[in-house]
Length: 246
Image (cartoon, rainbow, N blue to C red; front, side, top):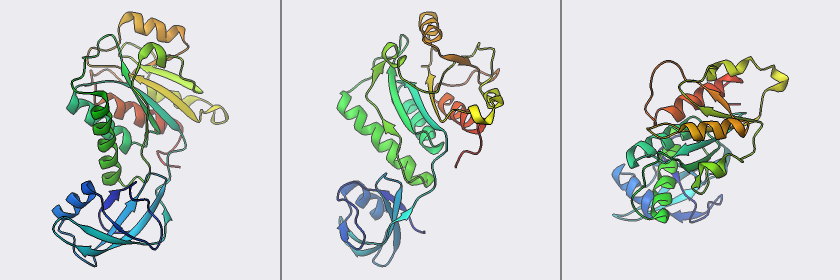
């Protein structure tokens, strides 16, 4: 399919219908100077994509004809759930973007001992994060968005179930990339991985994670920025048990 991609959940996408692009998508279409007859691709996060054609283009209004649904790019076999410590605005946006591009299935923002208190209301913050996930999915060609869970304390997240649970830590003896040595028949299908803030996890938090059954893993000898860690850890974990896509 060709043309720019737009994430739309309202109005609902149905084959053969003529819909008006919502405000965010219309602004994007205007910037791209789309005109009647131009192709585009719509998706609602369900895994399907809808080829479409602009049927009407006005200054602030775009109507498109929705075509037949097709399957989007397959998601990775490994279902990866990241617990990411809440970072400052730009850094958090970068972390969410890279996680989406790497096919992360779910994200839980976390409050940790060294997490800075974020500015603004929680509702607005979640709306901004969701917009970042949508924009990243549009750009990278993904037909689904990671599930964004409510912000919670790290202590609560330690009870999150998964076949394998890991914590990124610079002093860990085991590299994350070596996890692929697991026998194929024992390879996990879902992993919950914890990523800390700029100051890292405190000693108390690391001890609590160990006690809860988390395996500490290293990402190598270099000190990475907090917003870089989710991308590196995601890539290593996805690659550990096969291709990034199924």
